[in-house]
Image (cartoon, rainbow, N blue to C red; front, side, top):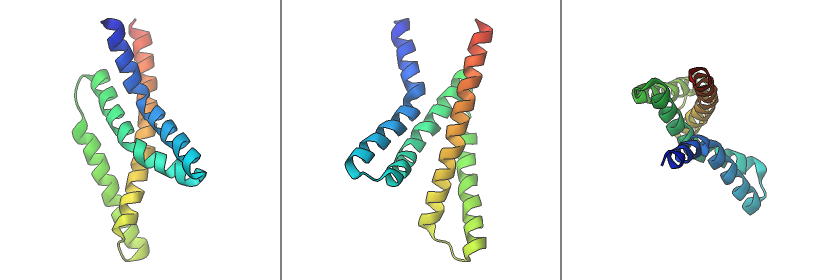
Length: 127
């Protein structure tokens, strides 16, 4: 039972990178457009990175900080809306949502990698 649980956790932790890679490979094979495939893989895998960051935080710290994650996402959307409004003087909601979503990918993929390293160091030091 312990091995099964370890396998499930390991799969869940690597899921965002695996999801990004699989979407990228499949869409490159189908469309032959690497730039489009990369962007689509980023857009789809963002949700997996957000969920993985949440679950790693819960595992490391024992508390759910989902409210902080949602606050960061809303803050990014507000920031992109203000930035877009200041530069274009007209808000194109599609561009704002796309920009905020891709910023969330950068934020949460970086957070994922950092939390993964913190978790590994924590696990090594507590054994």
